[in-house]
Image (cartoon, rainbow, N blue to C red; front, side, top):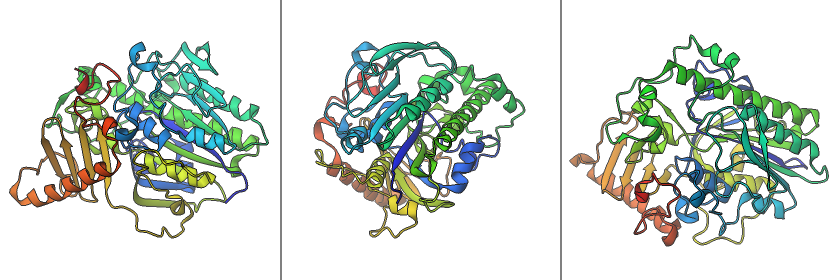
Length: 458
C-alpha cells in the first residue's frame, strides 16, 4: 500500500454500464476511461443498490441500504424536499475520512438534500444548487462553501475547474478525498459541444437492442417523451457526446494529478449512481422510466473502474457481484478507517479491497445481488432475477441466460414455483436482517416522500 492514500471518486450521473468500450460498446470514444480500464481493475458485475439518483448517492455516501437511511427516490427541485438534510442521522464517508485527518472536497452534484450548505465532513464544497436546471450549459447557481455563486459555461468544465482548484489549493500535509459529481449524461441529452456531437452523426448505435415496449409496466417520466421513445438519433448522439465530454474531464483531472506529482499516491474510482436505458426494453430512463418501477439490467448495472499505478494489480477484470455498499467498505478499508460505531442494523456491504490487489478473499464472495426501489425489491443470482412489487403483490421471474432481454415472466409457471419461493425467502431474509423498520421501503404508508411523482406520493 502507498504511504499516501489519496482518493478521487468520479461519480457520474445516469451512466449505464453498457455505454463504455470497457464494457463492450463498439462505437463510443472514451480514450481516458479506456486507458483506466485497460491498466486498472474493471468490476464487470457492478450494480446500484437503487436505480435512481438520490438514494443511490445516499447508499454510497453512507454504506447503507435505502431501507436503512430512509431516502427512497430522487429529491425534487421543490423547497419542501431539497432543503431537507436527508442523511442527518447517518455517518457518511466524508465524515469518517475527515475525522481520520483527510481533507475532503466536493465538486458537482450532491443531490442528497440541502445542496446550498456544506455538509458535515467537507472542507471544500462546490455543489450544484438543488434548483439547478437540468441542461448541459449554464448559467447555474452553485454553492461555494455556502456562498451562492453563478457560473456560465459547460457543466463538465465548470465542475472540473472546481475540482482542479481543490487539488491546487489543498493542504499538502494532509491526505485528501475528492468527490467529483458529473451530470452531463443526465437528460434532456441536448446542447453538448458540437465538436463531440458531430463525431456520432454517422453512428449506427448498433450496441443498443431494438426492443419492443416494456411489457410489465407503462412508460413513465422521461420515457413518456414520444420523441425519445422512437429512438431519436439526435438524443443518442447527444448522450454519446456527453459521455465523451466526461471522458475529457477525467483526462483533465488525471493530467492535473500528474502535474502535481500526486498520481501514484491517488486511487481513482470511476462509477455512476445507476444505469440508464436509451431505448433498451423500449424505455428511456432508469428505474422510474416505467410504472411499476423496473429493475431491468440496464437500469441497475453501473461502470466501476479502479486505477492506481504501482498499487493495484492492474489489467484485471473481476466478475464478482459488487455495489455501492461494498464500495463504501472498500474505500474505508483502503484508507484504514473503521466504519464505527455501527449504525442500527449495521452495514450490508463488504470490502473487496483484496480483489483490487489480487489477494485471497478469505470467505467466499456472495453470488447474489439485492436491490430495492421503494416497495419494489430484487434478488439476482448468476442466472435468475426475481423482482417483487410488494404494493401490488406482482412477482417477475426472469431467466437471464435464456431470456437476457427480460421478456418472459416465469413467476406464475408451476415448474418455477419452488425457485420463486426460495428466492423470495432469500430476499425477505436479507431485508429482515438489514432494514430499519421506520425507514423501510415497504413500511405501512410508504417511505417519506422526496418528490410528487413517487408511487407512494400520489
